[in-house]
Length: 69
Image 1 (cartoon, helix red, strand yellow):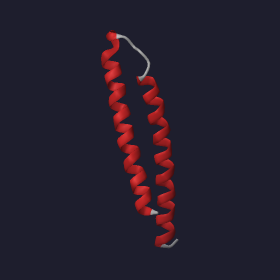
Image 2: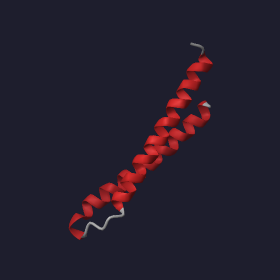
Image 3: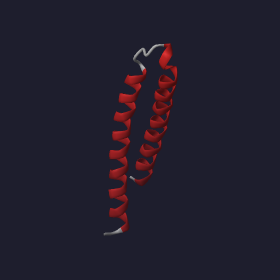
């Protein structure tokens, strides 16, 4: 396998991971939109933190895929 084909494979894998991470982000975002009440504020905070982390991961993966492509 040549370096170019390895990089193409890597770019494709990164793109798939970015897409998957984006889907997880959307699912977590939808969970965070549900009113959980004041008693579950810590849970809601953790969901929002996960949402932000997934968005950051999605952007980094998409950027890496573009750079590899």
